Length: 240
Image (cartoon, rainbow, N blue to C red):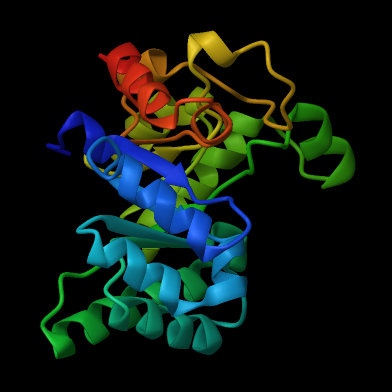
């Protein structure tokens, strides 16, 4: 994807309330292209989506829809109606569920004259490692094999791309093509790699971009910094 550096940076608005979110949006909108909304949506709903859009920024609605196809289709129509830039569903919901999401978002966008949101499939969470995959989830094979399998299923369903750890980028691009979008959580700048974290499959911004990541998600290293604007700038400088 042909994007400017800042448009590849996705910042999760993992904060307590909309007032703090608005403060972050206002201070970082020149250096962050996409703001990710998940837990805050349960607190203030569409208000946070509108706040981001009013600042001329893009919204990643990270609600990870996972239900029967008809229900997920309804969710997807609403997401498209809200004008979000991208949203996601769980690949583990299956082919028909993902196809319902892709079809519904496209149909709703065309009906309203909106640009269709990117619909991404969540593969394996970055908090899951090889042992968790095999022992806890009872899924055989390697993490990479399972991620690629789900990515190929997502492409077959008509999704635009997937959410996966940076360690699977190259395998996904090889299996699904370079235009298949890969958004990568688990990105940690060099200057924050020592911090305690629940992410297990991580990588630096520069390495993730080099491997082909289209969007990098970075939260705590920016949100917990004393100077958030400077931290965001350092991330952009590092990824070049």
